[in-house]
Amino acid sequence: MENLNKVLIHITAVQTGDYYMARSYPDDDYNNNGKIELYKVPVYTINLMNLDNTSSLISWKALRFMPYWNDPSQPSNHYKTKGWVNSGLHQLEFKPISAYIPGYSTANRDSPYKGAFRLRNSFLIHAGPLQINDAGWGAAGCVEVIGDFRVFKANICHLAGYDGRNCDKTLLYMVGNNLLYVKMDQAEVPDLKVNYFNEYSVK
Image (tube, rainbow, N blue to C red; front, side, top):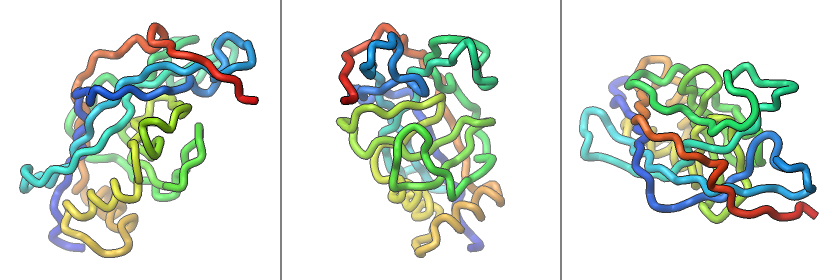
């Protein structure tokens, strides 16, 4: 795996104009009426690029900010704010990805795709909904990629110069050798609670 290219995962502040209907996580019945609330969440562009050839760019859509209920009676230590949180990182400086977790499985909804890239502490990039109209995913601050996460990972390996079968092994090598970078542009945090959309019964 020598002579691989350096690759950047650039999480932009550019909204695509799409909106995703998300639920709050982990408590998705905010008013305890037996129905799940949905909130309009903006969708952002992620660009993958070979740092030695920045014209080789592959774009994806992702969720950056999601509604999160940090239960005051049992608060998470990841957030200083208790209660309602517009979860997600505001920005992240250009830096090497600190870890790749090949066996990671999503917690809030089942996904056929595994793997996650650590941004900082418990904040990750991982699989999200397969399509924008696949409503009801939640998150606690992670970036969720919309679509086939296997292809997202394969795009990174391709930009690095590897088109073999074992992409996970390549990603581990890239992270271990500071060949995979991330940058998250500063974005204004949307007021997701104001963007309450609708609720539906789970029965």
